[in-house]
Image (tube, rainbow, N blue to C red; front, side, top):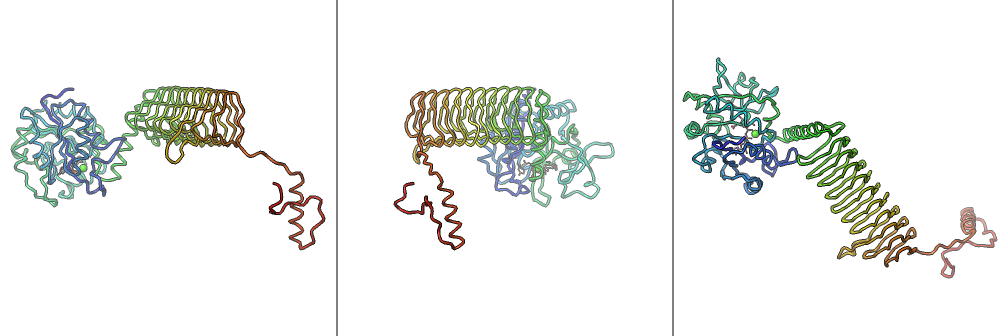
Length: 486
Ligand code: UD1
Ligand code: CA
């Protein structure tokens, strides 16, 4: 697809007033990437001779993304319109460039093959300009393509300057063009700011080319979505929806089951193996990799996760930068924070939080637990409500739990501490010292039973309430007196 004689110019200097944002429009995100990144990636795959991004508003941030993707930048300051942006871009273009493809930074859905087809039409038609157009049911806001009686493009008329008849036209300008540069430059120099915004409109160059009897072609985009410009939050949401649908369709084609795909959010770099089932409302984000035959259940949010084959991620699990090995089950309502390493066959149940910890094969931590900075050996059972107290207010400390350990419910393990293989911990313990292998550790108050105490206490309270004298009782219930043993 290499295009040695063609440069790509991305227009990304505008503020994006209609977005009502402090951030430049092209920094907003759709489909898991900033708009500018989406556009640059689509253009880059064409392998152009040069890729120049015109920056202006928040030039540093936009420029950093462009540079990170290997694009060149040129500064347009102040921003005096799309025509002016191209005048500025000219400075950065190599003399050898014959054609330029122009794309706006706010049309993220554009596909590489569409650009390639546009360039092909332009070359074969020996045109001075070829415009990518689209037919929209609602063309409002876009520039309209005005054709003459023989169907040849005459001009582009901006929405604001259009007559009622022109406004009724459904064919719109995408702002994606291919130009033969030697024909374009004289027309750019002739642009005048004769419009409400006092800007130099690139669109006016089309009429100027036609006045010089140059050939102007229009190619209608096969998919009108592709030209969607994100000027407003509503259009941003539309673009995001299209990206998510594309990604879901791609995965379904590759053998992934997705129920209610319109409700799932899957970032572009995510991979999912065949026969995995993704339920409604799941989000797979960042560089998440999910294996084959997994279940990603409803409402789960996975970010930069690795989930191996046949693992189950239960409903409403929230997991980040962690690993869930094959046949492991986490959730519902599990929280995996960075560095959780959940090995094969492990079970992590509801309201269990794991951070920077290894849970070796066969471990069970099923309910209401926090495991942080810990290692848990094979087949150990972590009772409900177990907490590793890993933080002393200053530093984090490690907890080492051996294999086949049984931790009773509601145990607090005050790190740093080691619990040997096969040990038992009594429920409700606070463990502050190492526990030898195969030992029983109890770290809690000893239980005291006082027979009949409750019955006597009830009788006393009843009499007090009825204003009667106290009955003679052999065993008086204790008042809160200093001398009573408790
Ligand atoms: C533009 C077209 C319109 C077309 C629509 C398609 C013009 C005058 N109008 O309108 O015909 O239907 O796109 O989406 O071209 N930019 C700069 N420097 C500037 C001004 C803008 O780099 O001085 C950049 C913006 O950052 C943006 C792109 O050019 O990425 C398009 O500008 P925008 O203001 O969005 O133009 P529209 O009003 O959408
Ligand atoms: Ca726009």
